[in-house]
Length: 430
Figure 1 (cartoon, rainbow, N blue to C red):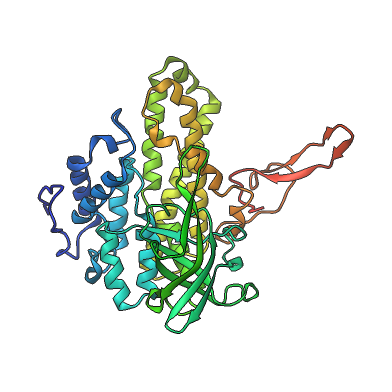
Figure 2: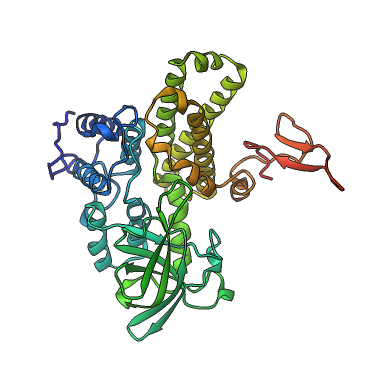
């Protein structure tokens, strides 16, 4: 099977009419198209790399969609290409191998789109889904609140029905991309906090609706990627509602579990590309090249390689499970944990070599701020213990457990008792 070379301006996808395309053939098409069309300043393995502007990213992602490299699993009637997760994974491997910039429309493609396809009306699907793929609108995610971060059952933003419309009051925080978003995927509460997961309701709220106020948050990297969003007597029609009043919780949890396991599948292959660049940069420096032969650095590199391989396996297993109609379960949380650890370890290695290697570092400037939002060994493993073998809690390292006992330590006037902690990678889940 052969594919013709595509340009940045073509509008037809020659692969859409071929429903039984082998993933390897689709991957070869993606590799060839990206090789011929990816701008040099978006290639992380070149010295010309720089962070693309919003307009450049939008133009590039729209071109990828026209080439059949975005919206692959979405239904054809809603602007997608009607393919399977296997083709989606095949393309993501090539995207990761080039370490391309993150999508500026990830909330729309990875959260809003799947939720609308799950609980949205036919009119909502035809209105929103094609526009998301064609980069005609951007979305932000209105989930987290000052007193309810990852704990969605503590949401307080309230939606009150008034005839055929809803009045919304509340506050969201850490909302990524709120300043540029056209719509907010807003999770609200129709009952009281005591109802917990019952009575949660989602809306697709236009960000230019009167009563919405966006206050940017400046992060440690001097960027304003996050924002607080205030809703003061915001009136939206009932047509903005996504699903029934009690469907908000189920829709959010279902989509978040799939998002953790299958979205941004390119991550392990991207980490692999970055690790390869890092090793090559170290080899080009006399001092760093000598350190690569030391056992400490070899263990560190080996640890990162194992994390990348583990993340690859989790992604591919999740695809197999979804195609078989099985639930992902805690595998989504494990994928998130492996990704978080790999991100943190990759950045620390990049930081150590950046002052010597001369490699492009613009893409990594935001990582120091973002790693504080990543789950750590003390939190995330509690969510995923059912998906991996357990071992007995122990006070010393063993072949089955990496838990270790911290010795007594003293401070003036006070003595702390010994305590047990779990090192990263332990399988006990403590």
